[in-house]
Image 1 (cartoon, rainbow over the protein chains, first blue to last red):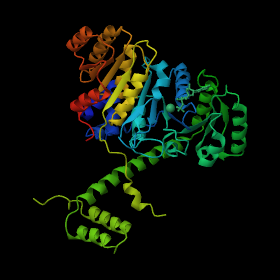
Image 2 (spheres, rainbow over the protein chains, first blue to last red; image 1 turned 45 degrees about the horizontal axis):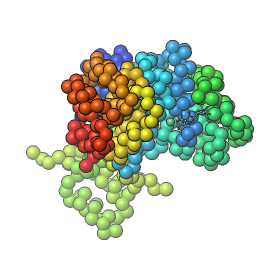
Image 3 (cartoon, chains in turn red, blue; image 1 turned 30 degrees about the vertical axis):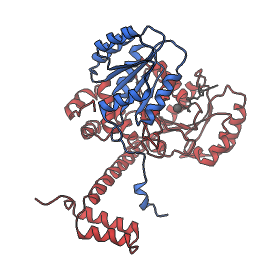
Image 4 (cartoon, chains in turn cyan, red; image 1 turned 90 degrees about the vertical axis):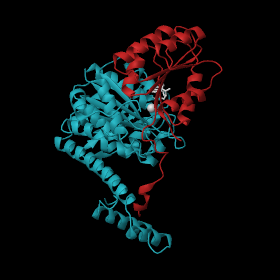
Length: 325
Length: 146
Ligand SMILES: Nc1nc2c(ncn2[C@@H]2O[C@H](COP(=O)(O)OP(=O)(O)O)[C@@H](O)[C@H]2O)c(=O)[nH]1
Ligand SMILES: [Mg+2]
């Protein structure tokens, strides 16, 4: 690959001071779990937890990317540095992807106060990519005041965004049959703010009414989920939306932010531990593991039980994968 | 429900590092169907394609920086491409991104092509070439899914 690994000194000197090339490289490092990912993480932890994190989710075509663009404009008006993480699906056949969200954000193409990064889901389900949380942390450490995360947007309930964003904005639009679909898919459950975008369209009133009915008396931790109207293409309503998100962010106690950061770290540890166990099991040699495999093949042992035992073997003897001498 | 057995859910072909390509169309011609077709072919070849409709070279460079791409593909068919390439090459240098490969496509006269290659543009894919030619070149440069 073109970019070579960089060490902790490089990231300490360049990433935290907001160098854009260093930020981009750090994101690639954590996204690809490259050798220098550890150097990046070592640099950023201790520096994260300052940014306001807003998630944008909703059905394809609802106007998420266009809304991100308008929200970025609003935040720039407040002179805040803004990061955007936009996730699109990878092809399950080729592993490739077309990442087109930033087409809607072209008005910020020359603004040094905006950093947009497109991520492919790379087979990860749940609306984000495996590395998305870490990418957000990297942007946070690099000095972004607000970070907006646009999920893949399947119209399904992409709950993972709740773990990353402090405020989840669910975007609906008239004409997509969204209202009922959204209720069915449980997507409204994850909303801190519900947006009826394309409010310039004729059926917007009806959509809004239906969503208000669906949301009636839905509260989370004493927060009544507001239903707001926007026209993302013109920016109408986005100032109110940004104000509402700020209000939601402000009432979030510091403890909750720590809690969220701890939750993300927990998940990161789980993913890393899973990889360590996998590598350990893969590296097992000898009679014990052979016996487990054969027992499953003969139908004498439950597959899940065999996996549990193999994991225990690997953890008990982390060195067994290596050839002695 | 027992979820433990699902820890090895088959995933998309695992690309440790997908090749990232920025496709840009910096001149004012109205059809971008050609670029869209190339984008799909690139995706099917396993590349991650960042698609933008930026016009200014500075915006293209900014995008290349942010997206950390290895390849920039520039499609032009309305002329006026030489200064664009000049600015792009200068912009890459300014940001220390000389290792990013620049390729051209669309309608670029042979005379211009020679000059562009002299400037360091890796290849120019004009009429008569296919997306597969570009895919082969990128794979040769960075490897790719088997
Ligand atoms: N009329 C109208 N069209 C909109 C509005 N917001 C977005 N669109 C259009 O809806 C389409 C899909 O927008 P996009 O942002 O890509 O949706 P996404 O798939 O949810 O990210 C585009 O053609 C937008 O121009 C809006 O408020 N009103
Ligand atoms: Mg989008």
